[in-house]
Image 1 (cartoon, rainbow, N blue to C red):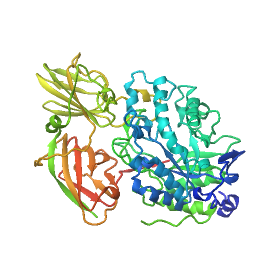
Image 2: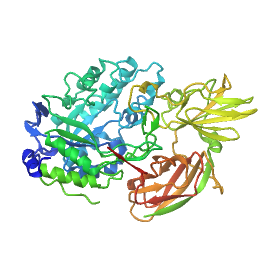
Image 3: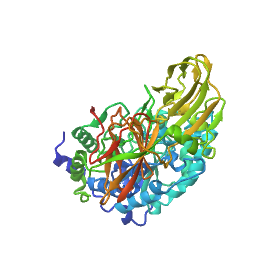
Amino acid sequence: PMPDSCFRAKLPFNWSHLLPLQMWGRSLGLQTKDSLFQLEGHPFRIFGGSVHYFRVPREYWRDRMMKMKACGLNTLTTYVPWNLHEAARGKFDFSGILDLETFLATAAEVGLWVILRPGPYICSEWDLGGLPSWLLRDPAMRLRTTYKGFTEAVNAYFDHLIPKVVSHQYKKGGPIIAVQVENEYGSYAKDPNYMTYVKTALLERGIVELLMTSDNKDGLSSGFVEGGRWLCIKNQPRMVMEYWTGWFDSWGGPHNIFDADEMVNTVHSILKAGASINLYMFHGGTNFGFMNGALGFPNYKPDITSYDYDAVLTEAGDYTNKFFKLRQLFSKIIGNPNPLRWPALYERSFNHYVSLWDLLPSVVEPIKSEVPVNMESLQVNDGNGQSYGYTLYETAIKGGGQLHSGDHIRDRAQVRDEEQICILRLLRHSLQGYRHLRILVENCGRVNYGLFLDAQRKGLIGDVFLNETPLRNFKIYSLEMKPLFMESAVPDEATGPAFFRGSLQVQYLPQDTFLKLEGWEKGVVFVNGQNLGRYWKIGPQETLYLPGTWLRPGDNEIIIFEEGTASRIIQSVDLPYLGRIHYMY
């Protein structure tokens, strides 16, 4: 390896004058000249890191960005999640944690350039790769193609999204120096006209900065679009758009770890070669609510709630060994980065309990249907269907026999008659006599990558059979887990599905904490109305991140939906536990 002195001499860079709020008279923007990037005619290297605003509480955006600057980075990259900004067709939300314009303005104030990755597809271990589930109400839908039903929806979305970011482009005085066209399309490539469509949709709405595409080496040729820049080809600036600092985790697996020294050595090699880099992730954050994605091959595996990713900052935004090693490396190139930012155990019982079966009549109006209906096609939410959570199917059976699902469960079902059985996808259960049957189906997260995005409908996607006869005459309840208020007493032994309500007492200024649900089986946690995400005793994740900014001094309401066996307490602990470690090589 090259000595550090040679490394430093070979790669001298001073971009202290290339800051968003210190550049006037802009005209050229980010350009490519032979094998170099140039910003306003000056040589420029992208030292980037990914932070997704929708995975980080708004109150912490500036903190994470200042830590990025302190590490030595100059560029922030972020995806834009369509399924949050337009959760229901025609209803757009850019408020709170989705206030993209404030996020971009904050980046400029901190002194970071931005590469925007607006999709419409983003992958990102995010439900359906960021595409809204209501698209799947169209049985002929062909996602990520020029199918009219898809492009009409994208056009309507871009009509609202792009005008919000146009004024934040470099040539308009903002921090955005480049915009990515779609995402990793070379690995999908179902329509040769699609990338040109997306590029044109961006340009027609006022995008004027450098366009990029991003693919793995096998997808570069089919993911390319005329007028966009490939990342990592000859006679162009070389850039690793996603250098993975760690990896995500799936329920039931280990917590994946990538060795810090090996990571930094690889980054060192990339920089020595004169390339630019984006660290994916610099700070991963959390898949709050039901927004986690899933792997679709070789087997279905839903991702966990935490998106810690073994990244440069922890899920809670704390420094790691990777951070300090990278900061030391970058300081040899740019001099001293910005100064570092250095920014109680509770145990509570639950005194309110209500069974899901007791709660249903007062909070959910059932939909009556002759046949099972998948959640996206339910006539709820002003015609947008159900996107996340659980769907309950009720019917009556009059004889005994073998109950089976024909692989029509997506993704996990709990069957109740006089007994209870938990299954994954394939149901087979013996029944006797007349029974009132309940099938509670959980959407564990839609696959976010691969060739089968069009098939990501959830709930019961077909018939359930008793012997060879399909069941009919269903009552269907849409359970999206919106905050509920319950009054009841906790029995000595509580079993689910049920809601539990308790309180967490905070005596002083609230700080970040992690909730440990030892003795609980599987469910969802809400604190002061915020959905923290799923927990599951199979691991690897054993704690849920609770941002201090979502707490208040005094009493804080905790509501838990537990599918199975409940404990009587929940603990607040100082450190996360993400499970047994598996080193990635």
